[in-house]
Image 1 (cartoon, rainbow, N blue to C red):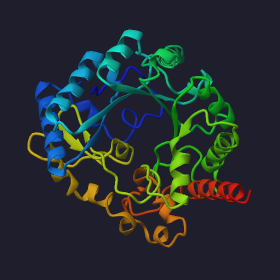
Image 2 (spheres, one colour):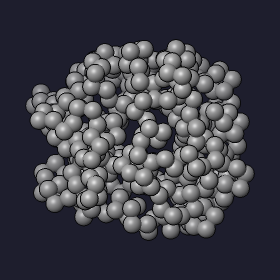
Image 3 (tube, rainbow, N blue to C red):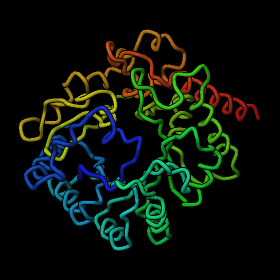
Image 4 (spheres, helix red, strand yellow):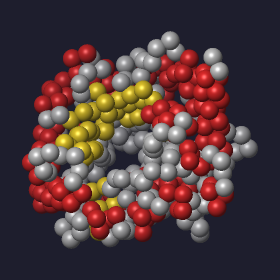
Length: 363
């Protein structure tokens, strides 16, 4: 919804990564793009008789466009889809621009709000600065505290947190709990074999250890104060339930991105791999979303086990790990048919969670 951001996070894969496509796109979608996008979504819903659609408003920072523009985009889709199709709308924000009135405007249109942070205190968010290099924490904290107020509970979707190895995992987790998120998710920094994330490759498992420490706090608590998607999905996969996130499981990935100029792209995390990695040469004016489903890059995300590297297919954890997040498998020269750069870390986490489940089952 807005191709610009009011922050300049040092690790941002959109503005500081390998892909520079954002420089050549309009700041926001015009009326023609919004109308065509709503039409294509409705067309796809009718073709496949969908009863539920997830519509996520992203940026940049989408709130730079204002709550009214976000609400308009959502209502266009709701008016276009069949009457029996429910549109579940949300916006992902850095929280710095949240206001009481803005939250209420979004709530009036059934738009829930997710917040991206690196922890619940200033030093956890040291990389999240504005374009002058100034810390953004005070503004983000103010916005998140406002969203966490009981009167806005229906609007609060949760918090996404990127793992920073320099931060203490227990401190990060407890600090985030102070904002009473209904859900948390911990994300691994985007990196690959050609451009590794901080601390990798390594002989040990720093990211796995970090996540295991958080899991133990969450698992051992007298009551669940929040849901953590990564852990819940891992548990579900370990017990054989159908579940998947972008980084775990073998279920097909079912999302595409519509850019501000109407381009249809693959998931935007691919922009961290190389210039044009997310591109499809499709757009909402000429192409349907079914056309996107037949794009080679998207087909690879639907092929499950067959799309994985040989060593992944031989691994006993493959049905849980799923090969790891597609973006993190990239290596220049061989593409994406590799194990994830986080292979050992994911094995560490999965085996740790499996051990805790075994202990619980023996009680």
